[in-house]
Image (tube, rainbow, N blue to C red; front, side, top):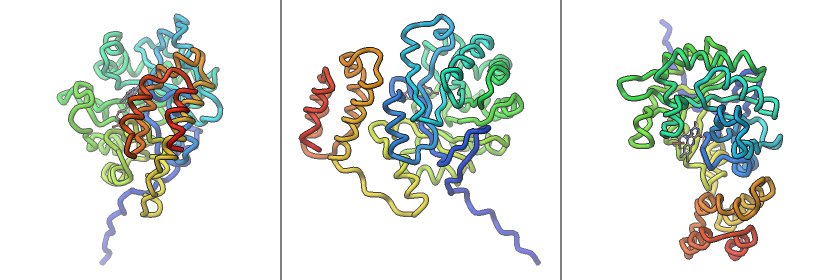
Length: 335
Ligand SMILES: Cc1cc2nc3c(=O)[nH]c(=O)nc-3n(C[C@H](O)[C@H](O)[C@H](O)COP(=O)(O)O)c2cc1C
C-alpha cells in the first residue's frame, strides 16, 4: 500500500521569474502613492531582500499630455533594478503609449493598476473601475503587451464589491493576454482599507493560473508572510503599509523565514540614520527643490519610530522641518 504524502506547505522564499526578470527574493514593495518614490525604493533595496520595487501609480493620461508634475515621478534609477513602473488609465492606446515611454526610460516591468479605489482615479475609469469592465481591461492589457518588450504585470483587488469577485476570472484572461505575473490585494474596492484582506481569493487565483501570483494585504511580519505563503500557495508576498518607516522589514522577514530566528529590531540610532539617509536621498534626487522636497517628506520621516523616550517630540519637530539641515539637526542626537 502506498501512502500518499501531503505536499509540504509552501513557506520557502523561492526566487521567481516575471517573464525574463529574475526576482531573487519574492518579497516585493507595494506601490504606494506619495510614498514609494526613488528614495524609499532605494532604501528598501539597500536593506536587502526586497526583490522588486514599484513606483507609485502614474497617470497614462498625464503622460500623454506631458504634465510637468508627472515627469517628476520619472525618478527611478538603475540602482533600484529590478523595478516596475505602475500605470493607470482605461484607454488602451494611451496606456500602450505610456508603457512604451516608461520602458524607453528604463522600466524593467510595466504594472497596470486595477485596484486603486480613490474617486480621482475611479471616476476616470481607471484603477478599480477596470474591474467593472473586464472587456476593456483585457484590451488595455493586450495593447500594452503588444507595445512593449518587457514583462507586463497587473495588480488587482479581489473585485469591486463582495457580489462581484472578478480577480479569478480576470487572472485567467490576463495570463492568456500575455501578462507575466499578477498581484492580488485580497480586499474588494468598496472596502478601501477597512476590514481585513481575504487571502482565500489569493489562493483561488493561484489555483487558476500558471504565472506567478503575488499575495498582498495585511502582511506585517514574518509570521504573516509565512502564513500567506502556506495558506494561499502564492509565489511572492507584496508588502505596503508595514514597510513605511521600516525598510528593514523585507530583510527581517526573509531572515526569519530562512533561519527560523528573528533578527534584533533596529536600534534608535539605526532608525535615526535611516531617516537621515531617506532625507538625503530625497534631496539628492529632487527636481522640485530642497524645501518642497522636505515638506513632502515630513510625513514619511515621522514613520521612523525611534522607540526611545522623547520620540514623540522628535516627530513633532520633524513636521516643521524645512531643510535637510533641519532633519539632520533633529535626528543627530540619536545617532
Ligand atoms: C498610502 C498608500 C498609497 C497607495 N497607493 C497605491 C498605488 O499607487 N497603486 C496601487 O496599486 N496601490 C496603492 N496602494 C495599495 C497598496 O499597494 C497595497 O495594495 C495595500 O496597502 C495593501 O497592502 P498592505 O496591507 O501591505 O499595506 C496604496 C496604499 C497606501 C497605504
